[in-house]
Image (cartoon, rainbow, N blue to C red; front, side, top):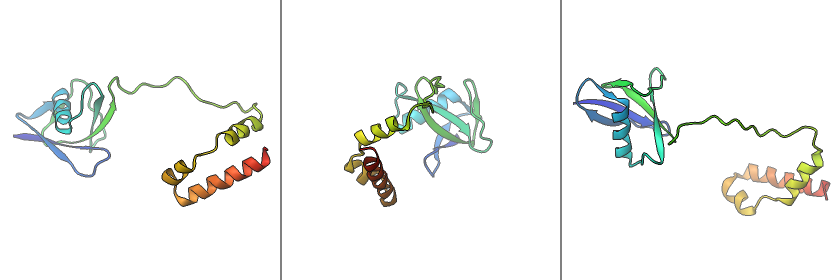
Length: 135
């Protein structure tokens, strides 16, 4: 029995996929990993990269036995480049931006759960300053 050792980029330990032969096709490796990890093909696809060379395996690749690979989940249709850029014009008056900040205060629940104490302090100071300046 031959094997390929894989791990998701967010994990520390490798898991193993076993197969017969000297290599496994990329398609078969993805299928086995998705089965072991209980992932659905409709939800995501897998990007497989050689752990040592950082080379990404593509469509018809054959992965040799005893390889170490890194797995990343990607959207089912693949990663698409976004053509839209969200750039704020510098010609807009600053007061419009500040008014929007004052009208949409950050909820205390968000401050408590998502930010650490230093970040909460900075956000509260910012809210106090902007509300006193623009009211």
